[in-house]
Image (cartoon, rainbow over all chains, first blue to last red; front, side, top):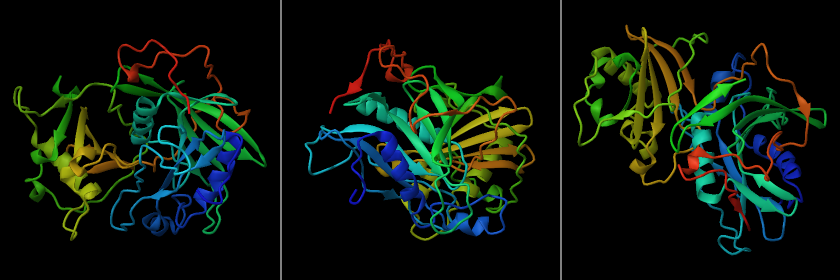
Length: 198
Length: 185
């Protein structure tokens, strides 16, 4: 994506991607108990992108995909292609690290988020080798706790890591980040799983 | 026994029953209702072979209520991904509540994968009330009383991942026994 990075670490790339995605038009809807929530939710949209690792040993973000705007539809979805086309690099030379998207508020990952990233792990691999070490593939949903319409701050994100089964919730406290294990996805075979909340 | 069965149904099964209920019904939001795990058991599926599936009218009513609420039809030029016929429906009956999970069937629209957050869950009473509706991406996080501790870390870093000790990954199939499977750009 033009004007994004590239970054030496995925943590730096995540911290840059979060406000960028949440700052897109109608990426957040505020707290569900607020007076104008229903209107904001009807207008809200979901954005998604890949964070990927290049042969130049940098982390970059793909172009953003955005879900359709249908006020009368209850879906707030985003269709992400399973591969990134970056004309600077040969097909098959990219490492797939994070699926990034936004949720309208402090909302947990959905079953389809979990199933999608596992499908990507099957397609691309559970981990990716980088110069800084092996990184597990995961999916991330950014959120803001603010009701601000313009430039809502990045307050945290949810993350599911298929390699470990961990469901994590991250919060930003000033400029430091804190994580909490909120659950685990236990796969029984290639289609069945259960979510164990902690 | 049948109330604990999970059924995976194509919309063809309910597409002709839309007259049973109105398309707009009140939606209650009872957060005390907990949804069952829809993907823990392999569903029974209506297919070309096998015995017929017997569906109670109240189950059909719940399916129709959920389908009409989540995917209202009647709009002109409805996109493929918004059509009821482009979805699959899972049903679990627990006591007096019928739970419905709706997911995109990407193959119906010529795609390989469904969109993120493109499904929904419903809890519906046997007398036809929507007791709870949770759209994907809209389920609020509620911290349990005994929530684990927060710890400072670099964003995105797993607390336990160790590439030297790969865990078995059942979603990769029965042959996987923890073999490292790293992409190598």
